[in-house]
Amino acid sequence: MASIGKQVGLVLNTFIPQRRAPDPRHAIPESDKNLSGKTIVFTGGTDGMGRVAVEMLCNMGARVVLLGRNEAKGAAVARDIASAVGRGTVEFQLCDLASMASVRACAERVLANHGRIDVLVNCAGANVPERIVTEEGFETTWAINYLGPFLLATLLLERLKSSAPARIVNVSSDTEALGHIDFDDLQTEHGYSTLKSYAQAKLALNAFTIDLARRLEGTGVTVNCLNPGFISSNLLRDTRGVQGLFRYVMRVFASPPEVGADRIVRLAISSGYQGVTGTYVSEDAIAAPNPEAQDPAVQERLMQVSESATAM
Image 1 (cartoon, rainbow, N blue to C red):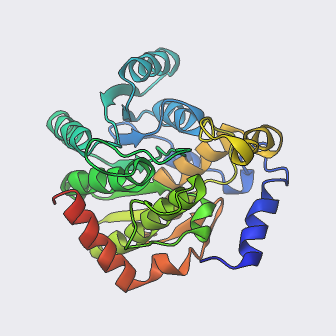
Image 2 (cartoon, helix red, strand yellow):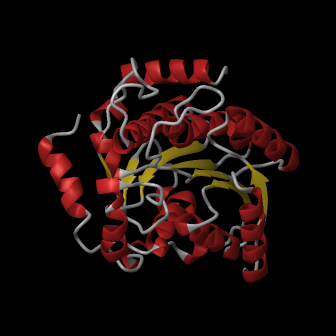
């Protein structure tokens, strides 16, 4: 678990005004902005920083496959982006990350429709205020923030390898520093809280990222995780009570979606990250994640339980 000092630091950081615009010192080189012929699969791109990132990628000429759980909303967003951008294309595919069956069905459609995948961005996330179990028996926060992205990446992995050089970007959170992977209670049946479940899931995503990067050495596929920073979003829309107060804090102090989107796109396409793999990028620099994420024993056990849970 994180030290008291780290926990206090993370809380205090939410009351410090964040960047209002992307840092020009880390601007994506112009030579990296021609994405014609590139296919990018993107979850969590129907609003907030994800949507801005999808628009950026399309404007650079990419073919974006936008995955989301709300078909009407997703299709409308895809139409809006397609009509607004000048170069690339965007299509919507139904994918509910809380449902492993939905993830499998979506992956099958994506593989059938696209002969190459250059980038996978797992940006979708959720803070669930109460413990809800899916029809498949998974705690919802765990399913959306970890298990679904794990399964999607695994199912698309061979296509990514055949398209190399390719990248996987897993969008995490600085709350992973507060997390602990409790293998005896991964479904958070005891002492559930929004922060506890969310931090555990994002920590697991980081551990998977580092482990997968090692397994993919020499394939041309890089895997990195990103803390995009304190970004204004709808992530806290369902929170209540004391945690719900952070929605108001976010409005005042958080960076706008454009800042987070720039960080996502940079990690997905910038030559500055060419060959970089197995790292935790916190905002604009590589940083050390929670030590649990770097523990080979934790990574191995997590892989075993994840493959078992998703029947891989």
